[in-house]
Picture (spheres, rainbow, N blue to C red):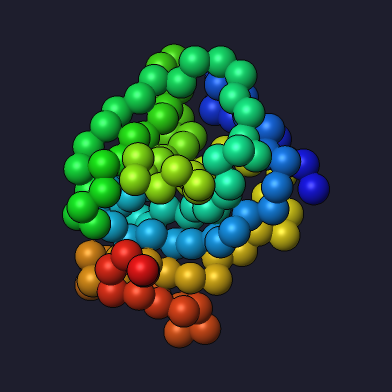
Length: 134
């Protein structure tokens, strides 16, 4: 199934030509920034299955996992679109909110629960990891 998506203003668009490998809620401190205090909802996808139109801006940082992260966002509207661990050459993350149609996408895993605020609801039906799963 092919999916499309992009930023709010349309300057960055992408096409995904593979199904997600995983759909996760992430409570790491970085994702809480991107999700304005909540968990980020992300799909992990094969990098080779993503084509991008437009020029996203990038910001690199060292994550708590020890991975060197590259976050891609629209330089015009600021929408967070992608996240990539530079050490993981096979997969990348797409923010679910940027999909044009998220039908059939639902989280099955919650990660970085140790970083979640005390008020966060962690659905007991989902597999949960206190930090980054191996």
